[in-house]
Image (cartoon, rainbow, N blue to C red; front, top):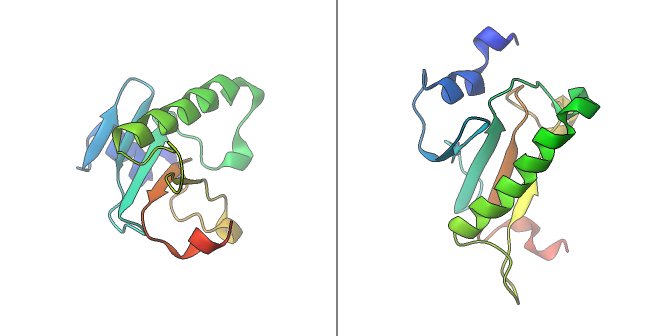
Length: 120
């Protein structure tokens, strides 16, 4: 998919509405329209990178800031790991074999009752 037709680029630009939980010059975070858990937020860079396989060493600082934002948002969403059974899951699907549906790099923040809770 070209950058011009990218769903997440259109969400980041405001062309397509979303239920945003965070927005800054580098990233946008919003609730997934088909949540797989009670808390399901997507974090995307504004820079169009189709997949995790396409990142370069120059993208390392951006990815580091993205992971820090995931942690900050988990805290703001009330799902950060504090002790005991608390916490959240972070997923980056890559390519068709990895379950990626939108070809714009994004991280999922998932929390709440879920089938993977017994997987360790």
